[in-house]
Length: 399
Image 1 (spheres, rainbow, N blue to C red):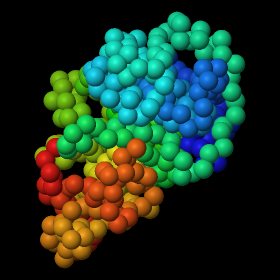
Image 2 (cartoon, one colour):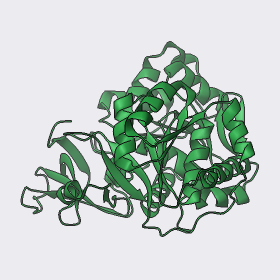
Image 3 (cartoon, one colour):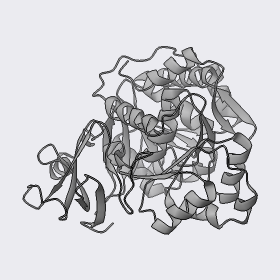
């Protein structure tokens, strides 16, 4: 089924009672998550949303974030995930640019959400809180179907803080996101018995693909943490027997520096991955020593769904390398004229493959500049070694 939401319907049918999401003492099964997403789809129908319409969400990692995400997709609409910390004018830009007519906003984010919706004009805001939101869903007739879409249809528009000017919307298709979720699952051979740490924000492509979609595709469980805190993260690893940890370097540093690290039982962990920014080598080595696990570093961008390259378990991992291209992705190092540079020399990391976006939403000029010849120019400078490992050297234009 091309619709990305099909992964939830399929897993709920196969493993209805399996825990999909856990947050503190609240546990939500796959069948419950699937039912909630169907209620969200019913709510969209009642609100007159059409297939292909954009629906924005502004939430931290809480269970409704997942039910709304899959509910929008199963209805055949397009998800526009937003950083819950955006200010009103940034909210307005995202809503206006995407043309979203509906915004689901967590209650703590309502003031900025409402301000942005008013500035954009013509946007309904649905508050996501414990009582009235649950009631709203209960009152809407569930839409159990999963809309027929083309795999190349846009599923998600991710606004990326570009190097210049206002954020642009990277338009990712159902196929882009599904293929990258499969890559994320296969990196550590994730199975339904795994428990994934859900502290990477789902509004961001790394958490969305590597935690949320990879877990749902597999039938694994996610232990959610709405706002990262090292003590809470360590507690979740021990309490929920987390097997796979996913984080950015600052998360690993915070846990290693926390006084509880020595007394926390982290023996359930079997794998860890990092991306988002360069992992200092000494931190990587310290993590592997303290936690007794390989920490695999990879590379990706919003425009590539995100995973481009990764170090793999058991491979020799040259210090400082972001690994080799993953399945379905090709990488070249190009000079200014679009020609390959010799191995070992520095060029712009350029990517083609299953995860590369359709383009920037409603921005053909930016799309043509970023993908002039079928190869997406990342703006990062890098080099290959003789073994095909990739090293990032610098930003072409500083962020």
